[in-house]
Image 1: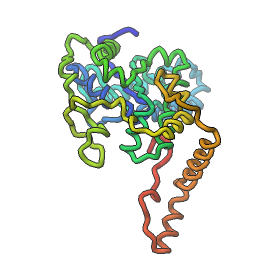
Image 2: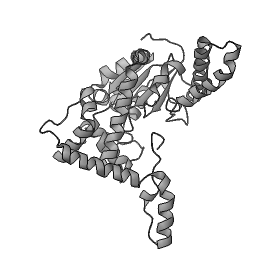
Image 3: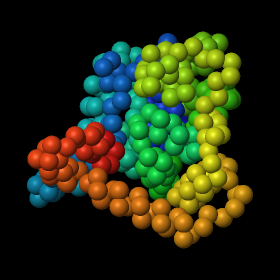
Length: 320
């Protein structure tokens, strides 16, 4: 990937929340030539990119009668992306604008909308990610595992497209944590940032933001917390039971191994047990369907029963 010295945008994406996008973006922004856009800390540019493509499709429907062709379409899409980049650059005030989104939805549109923007996709051991998702967002084990699994599947599917693979670099959270100098130097070079102007000592001593392990309260916060000597975010799952390892392997074992992560091979999950758990998860998902929530709350009010937070369910998909 060629390094240009002009103003540019660098994408930091994650297969799902808790994958390390916050750490990666903050580290890049320690460079004097890089910054996040003010007030747009998580922008979801690509995750909403399909709306821009739909807009082009609708315009093309009318413009094609006057000779609007595929080259015009590509230029139109890239121009919309350039407008978005210009807006963010004005808010960052930096030569390199770093954008951050903990999702990889619509990654296939990156070469069309932002053809000159390198992208780093953060991946993390699924077991640690699941544990952090449960603690941070109060997800069930199955919900957290499927969130991670679906993100990994989306990434793999997107990387099968050569034009996407050329523009995207997958960064393992564990490498950025344990081999920071080499990993971060490579990321700086890919971003067009001079490593000689980067303070690696400052990066090594950077406080932790948003850790589900170091939080001093019941809720995860985004205030800086000093890194302790024993801080190791790569083993969040050390306390898992064999049943949890079996369940994770059943739901996401293939994705875990596809990206080079270890998995418990002590025994084979029993299909009968796992299918029963699948049925329970699916039944719970039906019970929590958002469209049924108003009726459930109405009935409980009529019966004088309390309405727990679960009766105000999250919206499905990445827009939760």
